[in-house]
Length: 401
Image (tube, rainbow, N blue to C red; front, top):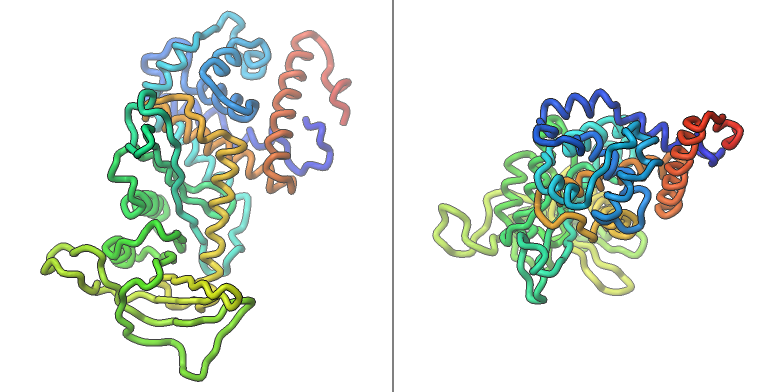
């Protein structure tokens, strides 16, 4: 049922990708309901999903009011006598097993990934990797990274395949303020899930560690990273000839070489001096003819052209658009729970909601805001239809096809 006749897929169709059998199975395997009398894992899942999709700004009070409403109970088959308080939601978020939601997210990503062909690149699947931070007053968020403004930070590090979020990690320890530590966690965990992957991981200048790049190369992790300009290196071989001038659009290729880079800090088992790493990488330097600005890219991929490497890096911008979508449309920056357990639950639920929205958006050729608004409208129509049936009426007379 959908009032939008030009849509190729409705919210009801998308929700069918979340089989109730999976929720029941995970409830048993994760023991998510071990101490719960009312807020079982399945009910929490639907409550959080409904509220994320149907509200501009989520709060524990919103969750309480929604659960206690007749419309929500009718839609998800809850008893009218079931009621909860905000304090119960707060406590449940702080203790409920986040792996339950992580497993649902992983299953949905696998199912949704089968809906589209990865034809963006003929040979590789580009995975954009980056982080965003959320700040709260230090008095409210006990566990977090300190900064100089009297607030504490949480870091959310994502991988994004261009259509769907393919991974997420939540960091609250100070050492993970460095992208050299945070981003490899996301990448290596994704590698374990995709044993025979053909991915290239694309990153911005936050990651600069020579040791990390060596580890990537040693583990056959293909990457493209924007290097800081004037990074110290030793050229081993140039792929350019003196006569060759390679240009495209407003760009001119300044360097395309096989190089060894120097570590910014001593590497283990070395003499403590700045030194070259053993691995050889590809250094591509391009320059904008209008502005004179240079971009340095380091990669361990030698089969691509220099133009392809630079264009693949440009696709990294997709994850910035995704961050803006999460913050503006799904309120990622507003923390419903203030402890790490609850925050992880909400992040996974936000990822699940984002996948529903992104598939709905892509299938129906909509913008982000329109997709969010229409999903909320379809949710309300679904509730209306159920209430009409409960009242003995025929919803087809209201929602004419």
